[in-house]
Length: 133
Image (cartoon, rainbow, N blue to C red; front, side):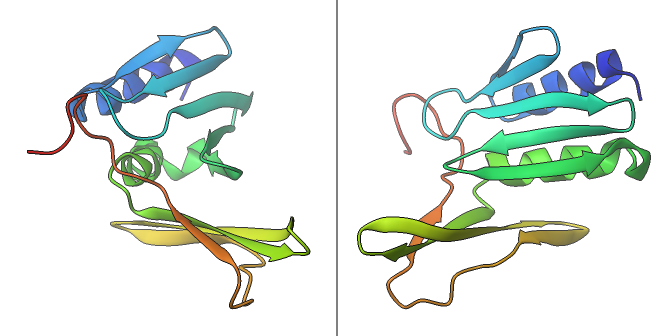
């Protein structure tokens, strides 16, 4: 896939979920229709892209895995199937992890803090500007 192919795919996914794509050249931002997290996607090299959202969620998606894989990962972020976890010690973030689930699998970054005082941050699903209902 070329970067232009990636942008066409991402625009399609954003529009399917009521959002839009802002093209900044080698970086695009997927903007929700109202509520939800913005998603930034940049081309790392001809074979992969970086997908970023939330506090620190960063996923590298290999383009040789096909356009369906990229579509699934981005759609999972748009539909609230991702969570970040931050371990807190003495009022400071000391470790973090994240987990994303999509139809063909799941991805996680380690370590996911086991600390009972860890903060769970579910990424919200995209929603309309006036909220649900």
